[in-house]
Amino acid sequence: MTEGDATGDPLYFSVPPVFQEIDLDGDPEERVRRSFERFGAALEGATPEQCGSLTLQQEVMIGELLEQGAIYAATCLVRTEDEPPRLSTAQFTVCVREANLDGERPLMALADGLRVPGSPREVAFAEFPAGRAVLVGDEADVHLPYTVDGRNQPQSHRVRQAQVVLPLPGNRRIAVFGISSQCLPEWSYYAAMLDDIAYSVSFTAPSEDGGSPITAVLG
Image (cartoon, rainbow, N blue to C red; front, side, top):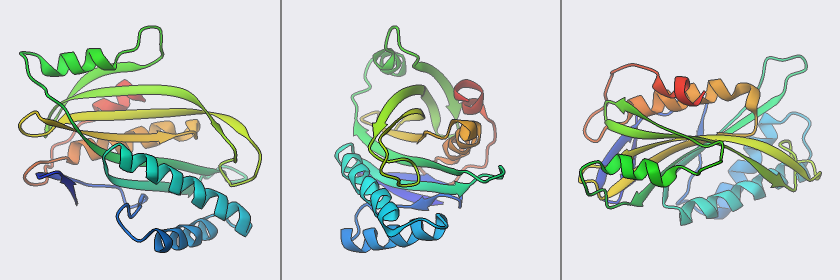
């Protein structure tokens, strides 16, 4: 069970052990060293240049996350059971943002603001032990200067992402739990992980309720 600093609001959630937490507040040099070693251990045969490229991309991502109010971030880096095995990655983040959820149906207004006419974005609702949430599913083309294994070969990737938006107590802030991956064959696996995390969220004590609406809506 992880406790997040939600600007004064207690926030608890469980993260699968396959995810490795990124130290957002730690010393950047130490974080870079650990990330470089982790990529080297996970990517058998990868060159120092490839591991360095992935580490640099992660540092750029961390800078963006901090600007977005991230309080937690983790990466999943695994090899599939295919022959030959493939590298599969995903990123999980928790961001806390200011939100004035006044009115009779505040979540409906929030959902309406997240909808983009003519886009593939999906917006729905689900009930969790921590309360009613807005679910957002989206896909986008992302242009990267490197491949997923660090090769210097510019490519365009289709990235799928899902978010669970939960109001914090008092309705003055929202917690956004998000997962994204360009490894679409494993998407249902990652969506199920987000589902489990959302069901673990609590503002007081860990909840043990079950259910799986995210996979059905966003999978």
